[in-house]
Image 1 (cartoon, one colour):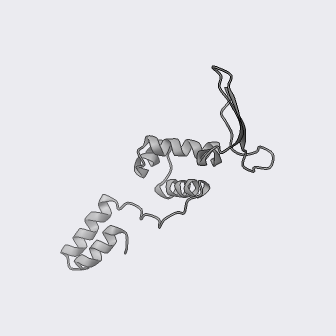
Image 2 (tube, rainbow, N blue to C red):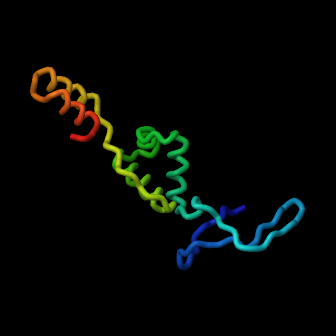
Image 3 (cartoon, helix red, strand yellow):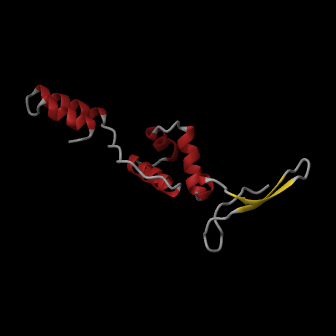
Length: 126
């Protein structure tokens, strides 16, 4: 059986289901049915969504799974959210590496920056 597609292969407009049929008893329903938001996704976006769910929404695991950088994964997620018709919130800051975290703590210890400045940097605000 072929997977259901959600976009017209000719003009790329949204397809609408007009008939549903039971393979067991042959009952049929006719009307106008929606395919839902997932059918608005391209095959590549759907694969990304499946990977994102498999990785429990953890971007660092998605990075490892598909071999892309944090910004590239974040961009695909943003595209996916918009395609499904949702608004995208403020982007999350990229995770701080252990080396950067140590450097910030060393800078606080040496008096180069204040504790407040260190918190801003570690939160991604600075």
